[in-house]
Image 1 (tube, rainbow, N blue to C red):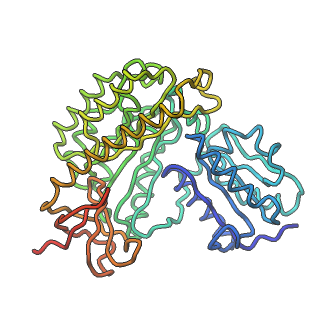
Image 2: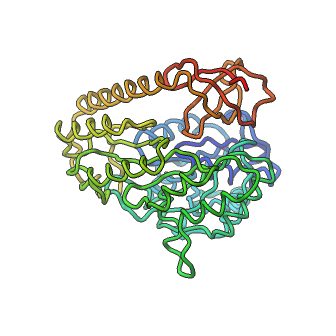
Image 3: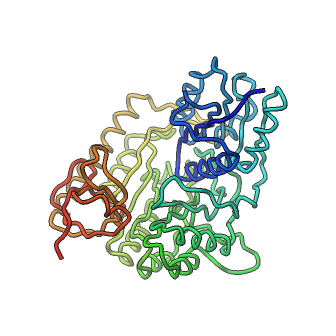
Length: 436
């Protein structure tokens, strides 16, 4: 029987995965296990994984191979556990268990079985365990936390594996969300991020009442203690005017909308099954900026999707240039097993993908430099989060999600401070405390 005294969780991927890791950590801590400083010092290692891109899976598989000859308990949780559940345990005999996104509360059951049975364990149910909605995890940060408000996705974009790894959309009850929000407020948290594959879908599956995402924001804004409310992700096909007005009207809701376009080509958008056009997307961006003039807009973009021509890429390039995104995550396409797009030929050569990727990244850099130059002299309110890497300056973010560093005393961490922007470096604004 393997003795388990220490554990380590390595998290890959999105904020939803980070929250899932906090749920696992809370249970292991309650079991009496101690968090190790590294994988090497741990008796139990859990890799909480992402399957959105091929590179993410390859990183995990490369990492776990480092421990195949060690006498450790190895577990794979998250999206890879779901997407590869039929092959992982067969192909990697040194993996002790896999734990799906719907089975997070079964980690102690798995460990009990591992200590009494010499078998590999597969816990990857397709059915969502609603009891997780009432499980309040200990957070890694004392200042910022995430709350899941809706799990799963019904959109089935042709390239995306999320509907297969996280299931269909299930909205969490408003009472459960409000209860956890108040719980975190009472603990002194200052910023909450509401998570969902598409927060715009929140409440659409309720049958007993009409209570949508904008309604939830109005309710949460009333709760004392929390200074800021963020959310992600907002699908362009169904962002509502009510949500736009909530961002404008509610003082705690941050003026930042992650609004992924994915491609600026109507042909590619149709192949992606995104359910909107370039024109309808731009209409919503313009409306959002009319309602919330100070809004910052983020995006995701896939370069080199099957059948993307140079003309299609130029459509994306020109749309990016028109919108002038404040935040962008830009990736070269890689097929994901089980998706519709994986059946199509990935015929765009890597050198062409990389060339287009670098062109768009260069444009993004130019846009940011232009924006940041215009910010010099402005005063921005910053939530002070921590010391920066060299421990010499304070670091935080504005409501628009911009990173800011400035000199100040450590006792300012956790407070809101007005900072005068004096310069910038790459994607970080540099300033000093504004004088009253």
